[in-house]
Length: 181
Image (cartoon, rainbow, N blue to C red):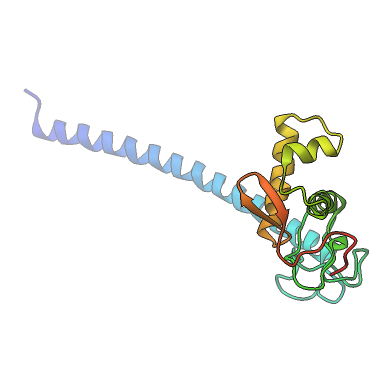
């Protein structure tokens, strides 16, 4: 029969091995943590530098001013000076009285023009399949889905209305590209 002292020594030895193993693991985790923190610091520095380069003139010194507000174009930069103008392929401004569709990117102008033409000819709402065919596009699900996405964005911003799902008309008050109202 083993002695009590022998059993205690065995338990103590096992506990020491466990402590040593955990210390080694803690050292490894601490080294990994230090490396990750250093990498994070480098990325933060890189981001600050990019933010400084991309900041509008006069805002370079402002804290946190690196990324430009997506809703407002630069006045001093190469973007359009009109506050209503949208950047190509990106934004659709909210329609308001007096805004012409010329502030929209070309793709959105085509959609508004197609809907306005249908309204002018009193042919009723237009579907995205009809628009795709009218634009000379292949009437395939991917193209129709892309047009539907853009048309729904125009609906959300007040340019078009969707009286029934999938059918688009001009929103009340919104003008076609040549109307200027």
